[in-house]
Image 1 (cartoon, rainbow, N blue to C red):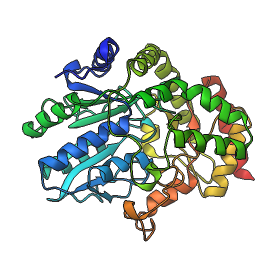
Image 2 (cartoon, rainbow, N blue to C red; image 1 turned 180 degrees about the horizontal axis):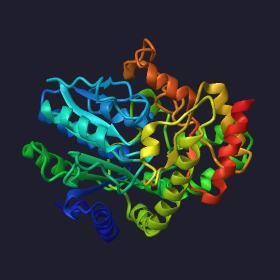
Image 3 (cartoon, one colour; image 1 turned 120 degrees about the horizontal axis):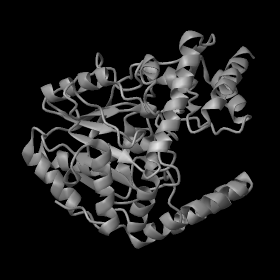
Amino acid sequence: MANTSGEAGRLLRERMAELTHTEAKDWFLTAKARQGIQVVFATARKAAARTEVATQLFTCVTAIDPILAANLTPRYVDVDEQTLSIDPLLLEVGEHTCAVVLQHTFGVVDQASSQALQRAAHASGALLVEDSAHCVGRMARGAAGKPLADVSVHSFGVEKMLPGTYFGGAVWLNPAMADQSLAQSLRMAFAELPAMPKRMERATRSYLNQVRILTRLPQGASRALRAKWERRGTFEPAVSEEERRGTSNHEPSLPSEWVCNQALAALKGLGANEQNRRACTQTYASALEVDAPEGLFVPKAAFGAADQPLLRFPVFAQDERHAKALARAVEAMGHYMPDWPRPLLVPGVLDPVPYGLAEGTANWPVSERLAAGAASLPTDVDPDRIPAIVQAVRDALRE
């Protein structure tokens, strides 16, 4: 069942199928990856009486908003510090669970924990929804090499794997999904998506130039101009104010052909991109597995992913102060260091009530601790620079 967006959309679905050894007919496109998740949850909510989604707080707010938009309740499960995804030992899946979210944080695909989450989800009749936003074109797979998830969501958005792309998402629907009635409903829902609104289409085209202007202005002037553009609908932020309040600034739609062409162009360089990131990941792992500096925690899955092209290499300082000192040291070398994912539900919610967090986040201590110390290291640099980056990390932690 075709999802349109013209010839560019057709080619993009074919390219995603090639990357994942799947079929193009099972791929569907959306203006943003988060919209794809919303379509999945909204359709699943209509199909069954189940009302909850098991997910994690160690993520972006836009990974939770689709749950709320579908009139479902997020049930947060603490993460395993070694994998940065839901801890299977803490996961409780029951008759109310609609789906379990498997997030490959920083692009770390941990097969063992992924398989454990699939078993738990399927034992209760829940969907396994794979968040591959950090690793476009990669999926968790079982022993036979087949994808584990019922639904796999990939992003072409801001600060993801593809340089120069800021919008667009792709959703894979497993043709072997146990609930074939739901599978058909999902295909229909994606096939019926409307075209991207004209105002949003214009905003996607002007986004990069607008960001360049905003970054060159003084902070106060930049905030004022951004707010003005947002009110007019001429600027499409990575995360809108509405999304930080538990709502959405757009209904799901198709990407424009221009967005599809941007993704296609970037995907042509994915092989070289991944090769470089894999080399960086291996160099970090070699340097830190044997001789990690005191006060620095590196998840075991990051070492286990040394052959994977990670979006960033995850390390964690003992507290926020040390994490920020580490980030400043690496930034002084000319490398971008985002706070992600600090605070929990990046960039932070403006109203905790819709998210079920009126009482705070103390019930998820591992997520809290990891978020405070997060200092993910760049993998889009020359691998020869990694030893110097690691030395800067060591020096910063001694201060």
